[in-house]
Image (cartoon, rainbow, N blue to C red; front, side, top):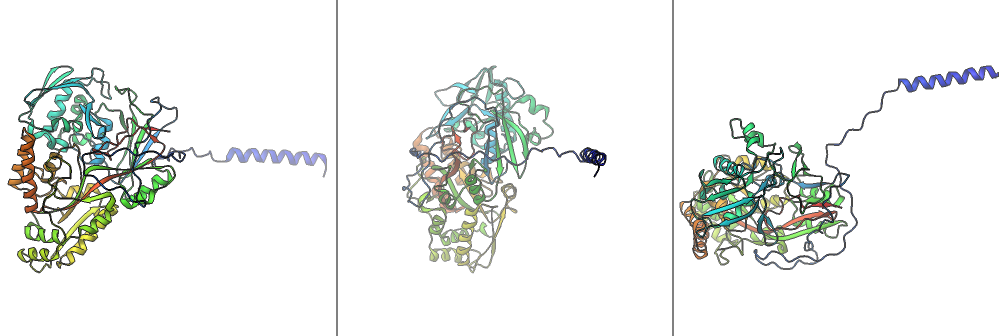
Length: 577
């Protein structure tokens, strides 16, 4: 080959290469993922000593070697300085955020978001839980217990820069009283639209219409909204539509992403008024994972930092997992099966009692984990004010069940009833199977279906759509029997998931007496009468008192167990290593 030909060939090849590169498509840009990012795996934790549990619930036996270990508070964060790289906490939960509006939404998942984007006057801290300052830096109470005066912190601001004032507090209480939704039931019977008055820009006075013993205990769930933002988006429903997935708060976080059924992401508000006690989180994601076993695996693999809906079996499976810290603590947390007492076969009290005596309570306790739960002895959890440990409640007795069946309108059974449970919540499915076996003995057929929680709640608005059996986990928002008695058994709460259909004039009277009594003895007497009335009316199958079960990656620091709605995680003090 000649030198000239070689030079020509080389030149042609170079030109062809340049042409190919020039005509190739541009590289596709990288797109930020919408799924929650995986947390960094942390080294296996050193052994720690479990803290003493809260003294309020009844004592429980020590765990067996095969059970999940006792929990520990995660370590304190070393610094509150914000990191250069994102520190995003991922919480695995099976329950959606159905309503961010703090005066309309209830339930633990809604409360988790509300408490992180809004501020109350006071908040809970410690174990046992105690009320400590939040927007209110101090307060005084009159001798008769009717008048409360709160001094507000002077530098608190809403996310739009507006100051948090006494007028905002007044507006928030009056809005809640007007809507009559969410946590309104906690204080509405002792307040009216004239109760809250503005003394000055940073002083607000609340005068109750009647004595209400647990008033300070309910205030951590009364969140303050920005009147300017709510009024600007008021619409025809007092801003409820807008506040369902927008916020008007002063809390440590704001909304970043809102993807119903998938995830709800918050980011830290750089201008938050409070400085002390902050962790290093730049944000947090509430990730919807329906199956508890999938939540367990997410924490085990490091795809989530926290799982909040775990079962006893999940905790046992996680024992010894590298990088996982287990939390299992006593809490006022009850589970019961609520009858539809207004519509359908169980409007018959004798049929309700027949089902209650046919139910296998020992099987329920075994399914829950006998070392991590106890059977309920009536409606109130053991150890709480007024709970009667000797109350005569149904236990499995098939002969007695058939006696009540014979007295009912269905002496031979032959009816079909419904049980709806939370999609993916395995323990409720197990309870349903126990119920199915019990009802078979009475010739009653059980139709079991699962639904997402928001759809279940929608059914309870009308007795005609409420299922015959509705499973309810009731977690105390404050450590007072009123928190169980009023939302769960007072007739004014009909149409809510806590009490879809039960309404008894006698029960209402006892609950009202206990709320307004000025002596502890009078309150105990009223709650004693209430418990006997509820056994007689049989609105529920009294189930189990649970320990709270949570799992954390050991990269999470700064979190401490508080025995009040502990699954509604408070993000502010948390750091990630």
